[in-house]
Image (cartoon, rainbow, N blue to C red; front, side, top):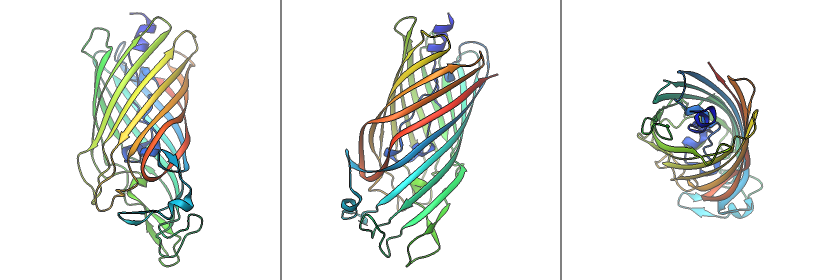
Amino acid sequence: MNIKKVSLLAMSITLLFPALAHACASCGCTLSSDWDGLSTTGPAGFKLDIRVDYLNQNQLRSGTSTINPNIASQLVNSAGSQEVEKFTKNNYVTVGLDYSSGGNWGVNLVVPYINRSHSTLGTASDGTTPGDGGGQYDSKTSSIGDVKVIGRYLGFTEDHQFGVLFGAKLPTGSHTLTGISTDPTSPGVATIDRGLEPGTGTTDLILGMFYADSFNEDWAYFTQAIVQTALTTSDQYKPGTGINLNAGLRYNGFESFKPMLQLNAKYVQHDTGANADTNSTGGTLIYASPGVIATVTDKISLYTFIQVPVYQNVRGVQLAPRYTASAGVKVSF
């Protein structure tokens, strides 16, 4: 099997944006940053993947369109008056350590570190200024998120074109961090929305499958489906089940770099439980994700991607990003 054929028969499943473990449909989509990350073809060994992601949720949306904060403040849902959030800025550093057996099996460990700033006007605002008793607060958290361990098996075909994924998200991230109240009627420590915590407190099952092949020597493609669902409830909170569908096209005609284009679709159910926001979580979105992978040496590669929304349909009123930026380095050893 030639080198080009080997490289196109695998893809990575480094699960981007730890926030995706929650039912925040507007947070972004799962992105495959490098098809080579799941390869079991070739010698056994490790791959270290270090990536940074920037995600600024500063656009208020409802359904398939944007919504003016003043209009949003007049809405009423089953919990009462609608909360109007100002922004959520997310910076992630995700370290992935991948091991390939050199045969049909492999495993990937993903450890995210999350830096997140959030501000909300609460439920008593006019969409511009907060009102008394609305539960408004500011928060800034920095913490390790929920770790993922994902195994893979590609022994169904001789060329390893089809594979399955199986693993878990573990409750390693804190779900009890707090913010600072900006409500004059209730000063002091404020409880953060569970969907904004670094961890969910739940153990989640992750299952998936993928298929990768080529049209010719220069063009390769892949398809992928992943389901993540919480197996437990934590402190009266359970994140919604998420389904991710990804497809990608890559051009292999250049020696030192490979342009890529992906479509990433996600459907996620709303959170449930007494401590969950059941009205403004969940939804459906589709992102287009152009990117490039550059080869530095035979063991080191760099990559960068931009995700832009093609379709967004969120439940209730949610903050959404206008784009997501990602960059990383992968080292084989």
